[in-house]
Image (cartoon, rainbow, N blue to C red; front, top):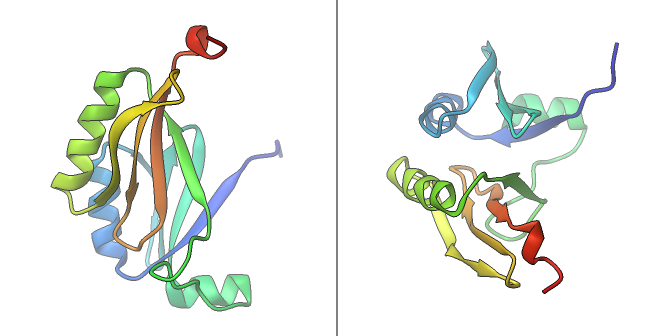
Length: 132
């Protein structure tokens, strides 16, 4: 079996999570009673109910209101795409905590929290401008 990367994220309400990521246009890979999988940026991301996640991880779920577990970054093909996704995130109930903006002169992006407080960002990177 080839090596693959799967991210597993705990979620409070699986049905709301399914709707949120489906509305953002991500491809659903798996759908089971306690988890749903999506293909996001070439990576399989499995959203697992908190109860099931704690059984897998043998640890408690992080309180995302008090701290960050990680920041998941997704590449965007253009600035326009970044703007479109920021609007979509807000329309389906996500929280944009960093509005679309130029970053370091060669990136353009925004950052948001999903329904469970997991933090994500979309970045368009213009590598031609990276060292200017």
